Every structure is written in C-alpha cells, then in structure tokens.
Amino acid sequence: MNFPTLSEKIKNKNARVGIIGMGYVGLPLAILAASKGYAVTGLVRTTTKAQQLQKGSSSVDTIDKSELLEVLSNKKLIPTVLSSKELKNQDIIIICVPTPITHAKKPDLTSMKSVAKELGKANLTDCLVINESSVAPGTTRELFDNISTFLACSPERVDPGNHDKNVANIAKIVGGIDSQSLVLAQRFYKQILSANIVGVSNLETAEMAKMLENTYRAVNISLINEIALLCERIGIDVLEVIRAASTKWSFQAHYPGIGVGGHCIPVDPYYLLELAKINNTPMTVTRAALERNNDMPQSLYEKLRRVYKKGMSIVVYGITYKKDIADLRESPVLEFCSILEHNSIPFDVYDPLLSKSQISTLGLRVAKYAHVDIFVVGTDHSQLDNDQKFFISKSTIVIDGRNAFIKKVGLRVIGVGRMRS
Ligand code: SAJ
Image 1 (cartoon, helix red, strand yellow):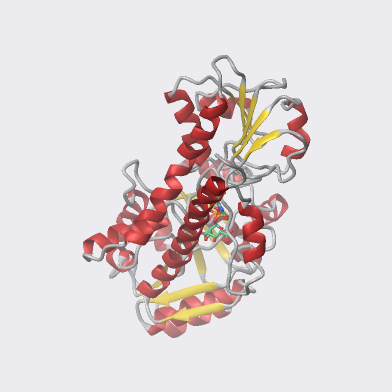
Image 2: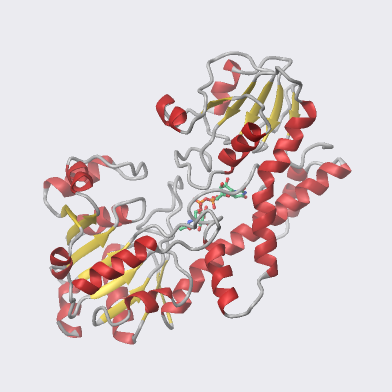
C-alpha cells in the first residue's frame, strides 16, 4: 500500500491496527484506538493470555474495565496470539513490549528481538511499524529497518498511578525513518490522542528524548538522595530545604527515599550507558547517579542497624516500587528486604496492595496485625495513615524510607535526610 492509500485509511479509520504487547502500555493504547473507531488486534504471546483478555481479565490495573469490556463486546478490540499471519493483516503495527535490564544491569532486548523476528517472517510489504518501547537511540532502526515500507518511533510515556496524565493526553513525541513515515504516524496519533503530537527529525531523536527525560529524573533523585544524607550529618531537615528551594522558579523538587524502582527510571539510563560505552563516551554523572540510588536501601538498612537489638520485631510496610502502585519491578524495598535477610535480621512484610500469596511467593513472611518494635516504611501507600495503628505503639521506632511521617507525633522517627544519622 502506498502513502496516499494508507493515509486515507488512517483518516477514515479503516486502517487495521495491530498492537504487540497488552501490558500497561499496549492495552490502554489498544482500548483508546478501538474506542476511537479503529479495528484493533491485541497481539499477545499465548492463547491463554488471549483468552483471558477476551474475557476482560488483565493484570493491568490502570485501565477502565468498562471501557475494555465495551471494545471487546463490540469487537473493536480482538485479542489474538501473535503470528506472522496476524501481522500480515495489519496496516499499522505498534510495538509495546518490555525492555528491562538484566541482573548485570545490561539492556535486555529479548522481547524486541523476538518481535523483530516475527515481523521479519511476516514479509510485511507496506504497513507502518511504530516502536513505542523504550530503547537506546539507534535500536529501532537496527531492529526494524527494511521490515516494512514505513517505520516510526514514539516512546511510551505512561506514568502509572497518575490519574491526570493518561495515554490520551500525554504529549506524544514521534520520529520517522523518513518524512512519509513521520507524517503517517503523526496522522494516526492525531486521530486518537487529545495530546500535542511532537514531530522530531528522526528515530534517534525520539528515542533519545525518552532516555533524556528518564535519566534526568534518575539523576535528580540521586542528587536529592545525596543532599539528604548530608542534611542528616549536619542535623537539618531536607524536606524543609526542598520546600525553601522550591520557591525558585527553576528548581524542580525531587524527594529522597529508600531508593528508585519501576520499569523506567532505574532502567532506561543503563540503555544510555551501554550506548555511551559503544561510542567511547564516558557518562560519569549518570553512572554515579545510578550507583547513589542503588545504595539507598543499604543506607536505610544502616539506620535500622543502629537501633536494632536481637529479638526486636520488625514490619516492613509496603514493598512495591512506588506509592499506590501494585508493581514490584526493580522495587528498592525488595533490595532492602534482601539486605535484612543477608544480615539474618528477621522481619515480616505488609503491603495493602498485594495479596498474602503474592507476598509469600516472594519468600517473605506476611505480617499479622500486632505492635512491633521497628516499623519500616518501604512504600508510602495512601492506606498507611489508616494501617499504622495496627503496628505502631508509643515505643515503636519508625524507619521512614519515604519520609511519610512528616509530623513525628511523639514517635521516634528516623527518616531520610531528616535527623542525625
Ligand atoms: N522516586 C523518588 N523520588 C522522587 C520521585 C520518584 O525516590 O522524587 C522514586 C519512586 O518512589 C519510584 C521511582 O523513583 O521508586 C520512580 O518513580 P516515578 O514517579 O518516576 O515512577 P515511574 O517509574 O512510574 O515513572 C514514570 C515514568 N514514565 C515513563 O517512563 C513513561 C517517568 O518517565 C515519568 O517521569 C514518571 O512516570 C512521572 O511521574 O512523570
């Protein structure tokens, strides 16, 4: 299909859209495109996943269930197993698969490479392939060039748990391998998003923009972690320092804590480091920032160590990577727990967003409601206000990994950057 034909199909919403990966990025996008009138095929790895999704069941907790059921029932969204045949049926193929890091903190492109293989086998002729997965500059071109006529990159920018910003209204960066690919991708997103569509010169600029925004965040979080540790030494309150600094228009506040988790911030900078290594460009600031963030669980452990006496009861409250999100990926609290285990310090875990079996499958012991000697805030879920009474008595020491206990309410609270260490 040539440019005018595909452009017309996009305009009339007759273009068939295949989205590879029905996770926290692909599924919201599929629901949105389907609700805007496109015929969307949700491409997943296994029949079981396709059947589960067909029944409206998904582990993605950021979608509106009724919207999903609606597009399933009107058959605007059809979950199917990824295959070359299904790929061949599509006019637009959007890649939304995970790009994690290995234990050795190296980019893990397993999913991307397997998608590239499937796309290669499909002998696509003239469809538009768009990569939304976060990768280092050059990866989209390397993996998907010559796979089809049109190729674009538009990095996903979802912010799980942020109800104001969603897939429809987050500004969309788009780069194309050529001008026709860029225009087609922009026209498609314009049809389904209310957000501003930001066209850039090429694929690499789009990829690098995503890497920059997440590395920027990782570096700034590491800076405030570092300043927090200094504040402890000199006995001032880092939260008050941040409040004061925030009166400067050019200062963007970040907050210290137990560490940095999730599928983006502690991950994407390692893709950049790998690219920098290949290009002999040392990225000392980024590397140091990641090390600083990775050290924060240990730093919180040292605070606990200083007050711990053998036999003390400990609860770690909240183990997911961020407030009110039930996602464990790269959670620094899990790192903190393994440090406790490594030092043979027994503890129990409570997380209101996880079931008892989810916690036990991690090899962790589920806490019962009982007052404890040490209460560790791993993740400051909103329910903490309510739940704390089940665990905290007047004599409980709080190791506050998220500075959730702003007022110390007569308790002994040891925060991050909030008192002499
Ligand atoms: N964190 C801090 N201090 C802070 C902010 C975050 O320690 O000041 C920790 C969080 O607890 C968490 C980690 O860093 O463990 C990541 O936090 P996040 O709010 O950045 O959460 P994410 O991973 O959901 O970030 C997403 C990202 N979205 C995409 O990559 C598409 C990121 O780009 C966004 O900047 C971020 O949302 C956002 O909030 O905007």
